[in-house]
Image (cartoon, rainbow, N blue to C red; front, top):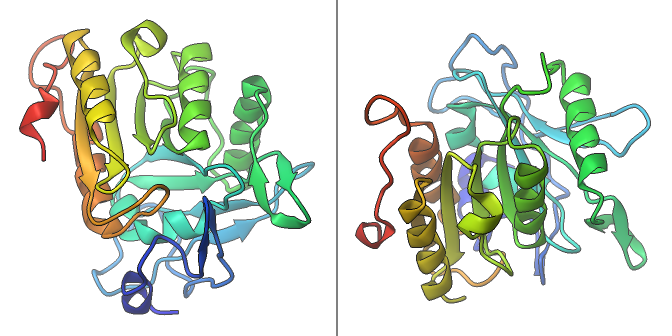
Length: 263
């Protein structure tokens, strides 16, 4: 499937949406995997299935320009590949993205997974997935950016609370419970995102509370989207990643952004 055809789909994946589920049976063309070469705007980028010893396969986008490491955690009974495909060009500008599959199957279809509460195990799986993708972590405090959708946003919150040195920046999308300073106060920078049709008041208030507590935080609405949908993914995720990776505004901690100023 071409990138143009993927972009024309009404949601984040390459197949029908079922609750948080996204069918992801299409693999894009193989791209240049070099981390030192920036692909042309029209070049091929792929999200590839990579075997992980002792675990489920991971879905890997090997970015070209940046050295950032990012992890996408899908929602309940979901699948991560299609979501990453929805913003693959924006992500490739920054670095490598790993999409894990939840550690428990949903019903009779093993392709769709959900997450247990064992965040230590999730952290171990993240490290193993990066190693399998040829991007081994150098130390326990090497930073990884978390991107969580729905239930995955809850696990992202738990990960950054348990491992604050490793997880310092995050994107929370469609979270059932939005992060508060009491739970993620050591987070450095955060983007909260929700579909325009799933309600935006709560994530806006959460972003404002985080900003007031010295977390550099903002809110971005996902246009014309319901829960677990990611329309216009390249644009909105490009905006979110640009916020996460922008340089600090001055010496010391970055200046919080008032999310009321963000549409």
